[in-house]
Image (cartoon, rainbow, N blue to C red; front, side, top):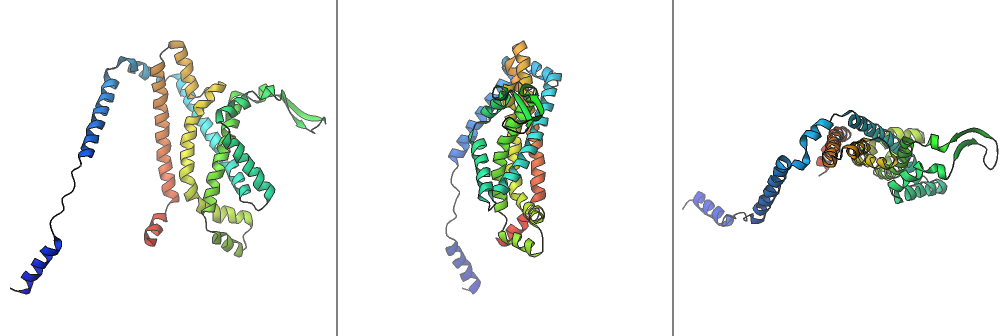
Length: 295
């Protein structure tokens, strides 16, 4: 018996019996259940007359619906700008060594994150009952340089902007703070050693590196805010949900109009998801390469 035959037999013995994969009975049962449920949903969508697809098609591009979509997009963009700016300032204050700034920022996050956004919207909308006039001047009975009625200053749009903006600012503050803490402290020390001022260090060194940790949750916040704008219907703001409500309150075609709103939200969320994907990809350049090399 030559050495090659002996080696082959040794390999066969060491390999042992062939291991067969286990039967996936539960997986196939799950596939069958999902298939039945999906078939039932498709059947209902095609056969159930309550969906009223012709009505859905008629109102998808209705003037009032499109105006509501435009208002939803506008409100989402402005709220996110306000919330992001507030979040950056509050996050920097929370990381400050000044105890007064840290306390004020913590109190801001505690209050606006701890109270429901619906309560905040209704509060701002009814601010006139607490302060009938808004004025600019010397407090405690001093002269007033400018004065305006609260009912004029706080419109439905302003109430929604303030309520959603401050609430979003509290959440963005925690997101930005987490992103800033993810940057190694040595980066700031190196920047200071190069003679950069604190603001330059923050803008040029710290914030760009923190973006890869800030962008993903911020994208989720934008998508969430797009849907949160529907709450502004309680203050009679003519965003998408309120526009749809106005239509079906006249026509009593509730289900098809709700489908119209859901489809538009799905379209806008899908677009934002694509934008978020490319922004995350941009700020993650080189990150996966370095992570793989470290592994």
